[in-house]
Image (cartoon, rainbow, N blue to C red):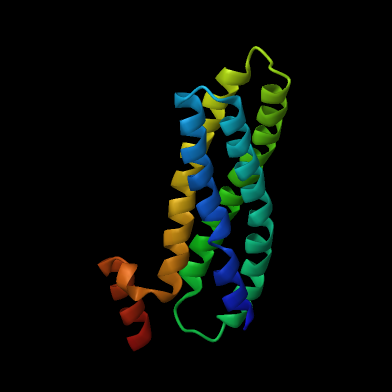
Length: 158
């Protein structure tokens, strides 16, 4: 396995865990269950930890792709989106840690805080989708727009 393969193997975890956590948190809100909400917070915290190796292997993956032509703009776009996603993932993990504590201690704002975390999760999932799509464009020409493909074809002929 090369460095790009490690990145591809690891990058799905921080994308999938917030989806799972979101579904669990929605269930915890609908059923008003403190235990289910705690499980969701744990999933979000785990997702934040999963972001670290995915992010760190990204730099190594870039070195593996340096021999490919015309992917640099796609890599730069992906790096920018990945940085935003990673920051949101870490923020969600920290807020979930606080949400777990407030839920455990039965603070008066614990339910309100769960809605805040749910909202942050939706925002983060939008960034997750953008990050995943921009990463896919690096090697998957079938998901590039026609303008992106035309630009690369023009650069090849020059």
